[in-house]
Length: 117
Image (cartoon, rainbow, N blue to C red; front, side):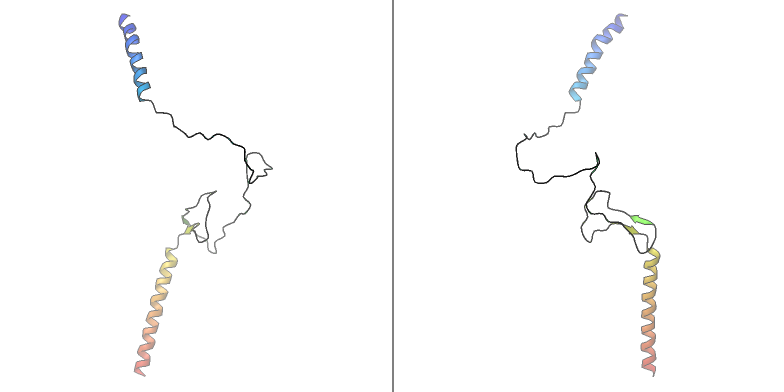
């Protein structure tokens, strides 16, 4: 019984002191006092807790497919020319490479026929 009492008297305060010494420090945030000023803009909200954007855009790609990249998230600001989403298109890229190769082959055949004539 005395060992348990000695344990409680020595170990518990030591553990509490160690926790207090190594606890996460609170964040120090700058405080800005409130001041009177001119109201520059007001927002009218008809539904409590939500504000809707004035401009919205719906994405409608001309071809369907599997999305491979979607770098934007809801609420992000995007600029003209930013990538909104990328579709898997390796098959289309291969078709373009094949078409270019066939076009080059046709030009070469045309030149050889013209030289023979």
